[in-house]
Image 1 (tube, rainbow over the protein chains, first blue to last red):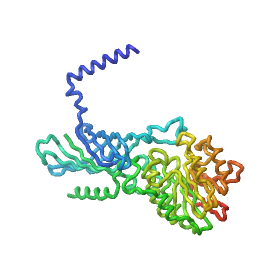
Image 2: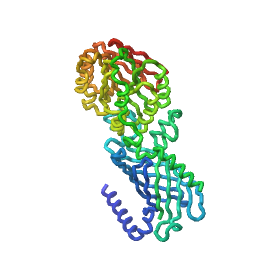
Image 3: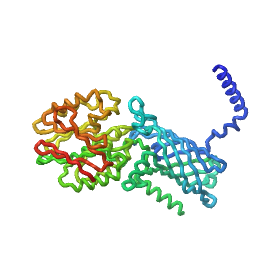
Image 4: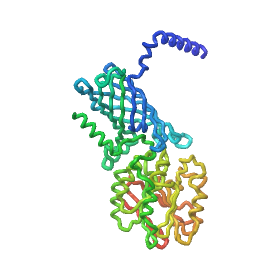
Length: 201
Length: 264
């Protein structure tokens, strides 16, 4: 055990030493590519966070957001979101912008609240009494985004582009309700909207 | 240009209250408030009604399609004074489910009241229920009969000995000159493992000792059952679930109670 700890320390020190040398290079991936602010969309009254472009083609996006719902809007809720989105199609708008017409995404939310547990307590409930998690919620989403080339709008502000998006999402709860009741519920019942701004550096 | 129009269209669509902050928010701009109180006001006290007839159903969770048919079936029956939805309105205790079900139940001709079920108490369902329907323990009088609706979801409180609230029940079941009979309504029946075992004796004795106590009505098990847990002669009746397309029509005439199973 001690040996392991020693080894681990050694490796850790090596890592730190090497990273200090070339930190700018190695940890560049930690610097976000985008800053995001979103209204609604089931992840908070308002939420904010960072986005990372993924893959060589930059069609993938990972957003990490923190959202808040105040008491007077049905809260108080603190929500952490990790969203993976993909932009399969791009429409060029002359030289001043782009449209990503239909971008599928999946995201998970974790809601912090005393009434919401990750798992129902096993002492209180038999296994499978309730089959879901109250706090952790998987979502399915689709968004449309219009991206404006910042350099064409204003010069020298250090921003590459500004994206405005609208996103419709649903979650496991709503999907289960919908799939079992396709005549009483419609797709628009289960999809909820959010709008956001994505600033790209 | 066409894209902008599309965006405008989306925005218009969006404005119809589809902006959700969280599935766990307890209310939103259009969510209803005090449904039970509003409907009871509409019901009135039935002072001149000597035949009290009502529908007992429960467990509408995940059964929106069936609830639509339920409303049609109930509306087709003449003389129904009110409808009781005895718990598990929702599957996951979230606002949207309560909104969807209430939207459907608004098609009922008679007024309806809801009683809280164990599923409704998951997540933030208790707060959502309080906001949308009202108190978890409440009572109303119609046609000289007092209906005592209460929370019997003991497991949700980890069997803390407080649910069902027996002191509250005893107080509600006190004799009064205007009241001829009493009916108890809650979600979890006394013969269920989800009912606090420590309270069974006190609970059934409380009903047995109440002069004019007619019946204890429940849902939860999804199957019709009529049983007698003690020798008081008081019937304990469980209604079938919405999904099974069956409900109970309960009738009280001259303090005599009868039950009819109706299929739709």
